[in-house]
Length: 138
Image 1: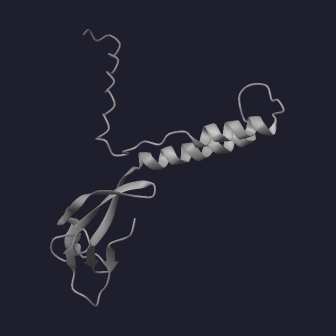
Image 2: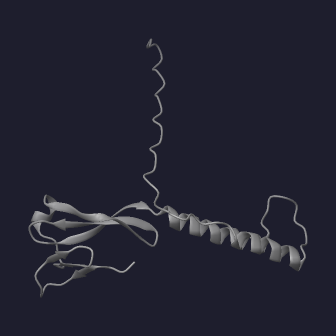
Image 3: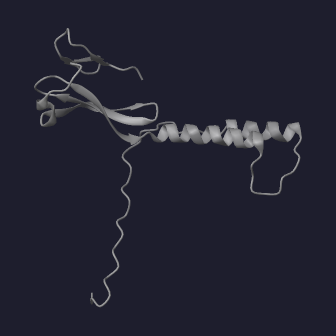
């Protein structure tokens, strides 16, 4: 993804969100209390992020909040391709023919990727119930 954020001291701060954001190079004291979220979240290589903009001075930062699941799937695919070539299975090692190696590599390359990586929000984990303290009746 291209970076739309531009840090400049010689130009006035501007928020033209989907196309460009011009920001001062240094934050001010007002930035601690007046930062606002700008636009929707986006993905940059391995992380999801959104922009935060100070409503008073115009200072802007990218706020990274979660790893991208799509990048994790891509990394898993690369590992699967490497393991198919090296044969690091849990079974007894055996010599494989070139045809077997080629078949495993072809199978690993055809491993499907998700069509739409951003389908919805992730479901939260279930909360565990704490065990009652000894001697306390429930």
